[in-house]
Amino acid sequence: MLMSNSNRPARLHYMANGFRVLTPGDHVICAVSGARIALEDLRYWSPAAQSAFASAAIASEALSPR
Image (cartoon, rainbow, N blue to C red; front, side, top):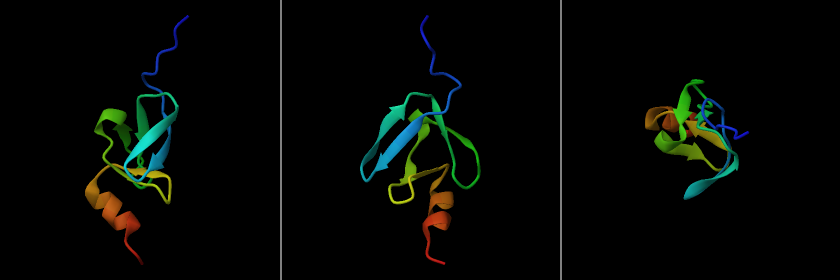
């Protein structure tokens, strides 16, 4: 039986210029908002925090020094 990766969260390793899929899936969850981000729409992440973000504004806010 083939396993479908749809509707399953992926586990990724975030790097400076991309990411590597550790566990197949079709989305990740935003570290701040909890929004579902389709892998093909994933544009913002932090390699240091190993976190994904749903938008540039959310990433900027989350990564700005306090």
